[in-house]
Length: 192
Ligand code: SF4
Ligand code: SF4
Image (tube, rainbow, N blue to C red; front, side):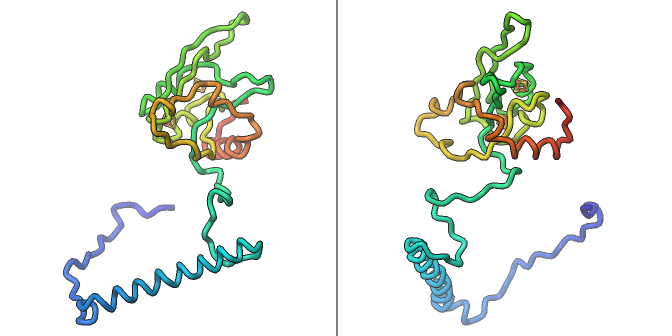
């Protein structure tokens, strides 16, 4: 449980800190800083050589893109649309995500099929606007849009390349299974 804000004691910030003569000479502090930097540089260099030889290393640097970190399910990457088993989107074009999106990044054109079911004839997500807040995911009654762990391909030279269509956003349920299980826990959803 968090501490009530009223009970928090303000801490005094020391604004006038007198430097010692040693610190005021700067050169020794610069040497100290360079020593720390060199130590880490050498540790990473040795680690790189060990890695290249296929040996285990004890450093935490990740050699991206050859190596990638495993992201926790709480990570909010690119919002994606979840696919049904028949390859169609789960989305029923209710428009809630479009309404809630604080960045107005989503635009949907809804239509009805011959059975009278609604579906998004067009679902556009402008990734140049998205702020990864996850509101669209939270509000969706069908778990049809979820925050994936995708973080690559989000930087483009032309912002028009960040306009994603429904087809570009569709992902299999299996690929976002971890996130779906996670949002069921955090939002206590019981949709299905
Ligand atoms: S994550 Fe937030 S900003 Fe991005 S599309 Fe969803 S609601 Fe909009
Ligand atoms: S809230 Fe969900 S079901 Fe409704 S339009 Fe958005 S993605 Fe589709």
